[in-house]
Amino acid sequence: MKISLITPAKKHSKNGNRASALRWAGFLRDKGHRVRIDVDYHGRPADLMIALHAWRSAGAIERYREIYPNGPLIVALGGTDVNGFLTSDPDVTLKSMDTADALVCLHDLIGKALPRRLLRKLHVVRQSATPLPGPRRPAARHFDVCVVGHLREEKDPYRTALAARLVPAQSKLRVIHLGKAHSDEWAIRAREEMAANPRYVWKGEVPSWRVRREYAKTHLMVISSNQEGGANVVSEAIIAGVPVIASDIDGNVGLLGADYPGYYPVRDEQALADLLWRAESDPKFLKSLAAHGRRLKPGFTAAREAAGWHRVVKLVT
Image 1 (cartoon, rainbow, N blue to C red):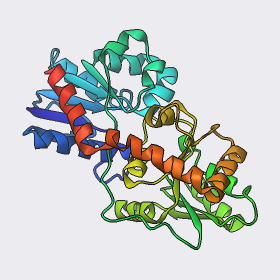
Image 2 (cartoon, rainbow, N blue to C red):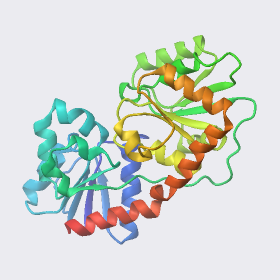
Image 3 (tube, helix red, strand yellow):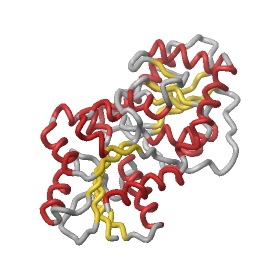
Image 4 (cartoon, helix red, strand yellow):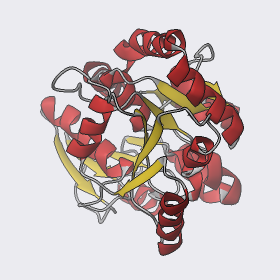
């Protein structure tokens, strides 16, 4: 089939939307489909459209429907669709969802936020990640913790830095933050935090190989987001064997499970500091996080994600 895959992320963007689109296109091409990735739809012939993000891709969805009233359409829900635009612009967001033949989401709890009429066409397809090329060797001098995420409001990006100020003085904690600042104000605050907090290091936007190198030497990864649709950094950490500490939002619980022992109340840096110190000072706790991750690992493989996408494509075509 000719598949039009629409993503709001431009060609050279390093954000999650672009990475997801490229990965999904690879799965579909492996099955012999011809996939064109665009940020918008301009009427090119297509046997199927896959639109990433109900609100941001609404224009492309509408144009596709005008040309192909009965053409198969899959809408992959972004985190801001469910956590933001469903409230701030429900007419546009729900129109895209209602128009779709199938909805793809990235974690188990998204259905809680959707109208019941949409649940029958909702499918969970977790994002996958590539294993590290060799064994992990966590740093010995520091208890390194990585934060992988852009500096913007949804990510609550400085929460781990604030928590690092609250750990006991004898802690060897060091926070390594990889991610692009979405404005000069976010960058200024990161530099100010580095100047005031010797436990915090912001590296800015880095290539994917640099992120993978961090996974190889870090002791754990913190995802501190206020909202998520199912973050790929969780998949990356699980596949890399990196223990995870996460805010207790649906987007994290829907990936890691209700019984995961590494949650803290969102936006609570004292609770996060307590968990970080426990992970550093109690080897059994750190091992328990790693053991939970190993049990979850089969759900985040590329084969599992590819099979999920092939299943949904078959259902709508």
